[in-house]
Length: 141
Ligand code: HEC
Image 1 (cartoon, protein in one colour):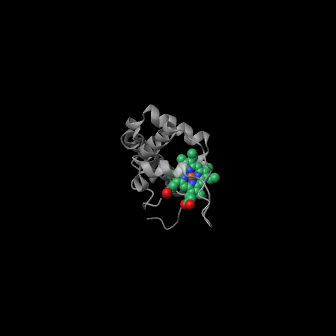
Image 2 (cartoon, protein in one colour):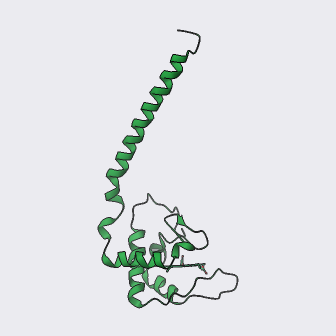
Image 3 (cartoon, protein in one colour):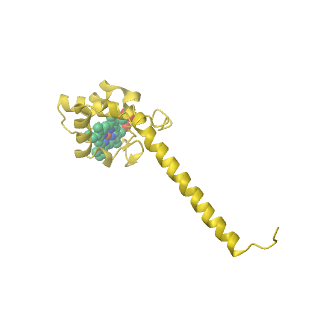
């Protein structure tokens, strides 16, 4: 075995490594894409969920909250709020804002109708049932 590390050895490691990791990247991409339909809860998307998502976007909930980690860090994570609080609490909470509780951050009043609140809850229920490999790691988001 040669004692020196030649240019051609370096080149072979570079090309070999590049090809290996590129193929690994393709395989993992393919794997992710093939399991996604089973994990992303797309079968549960109803017109109510779509409308709830629209309300979520047009009222800028994400300007304060995160949803599955994406968004702002001013207010609690809501990806699993349906599981931690349930539908009745969520509706009552949104209706009762702002709380004006001393020393707590405030959430605005949105004046949603009851059917809008039902649709927002439907969207949050859908989000809570996406298979995220148990993320966020605890109930409080
Ligand atoms: C201006 C920032 C702001 C916006 C915009 C906002 N929120 Fe909030 N939200 C908060 C804060 C702050 C809290 C926590 C308040 C507290 O704990 O006293 C909160 C709490 C909540 C909770 C209760 C969470 C829990 O764990 O109990 C829900 C549900 C919620 N928000 C839903 C929404 C929805 C839906 C929207 C959009 C329609 C929205 N929020 C928009 C600031 C905001």
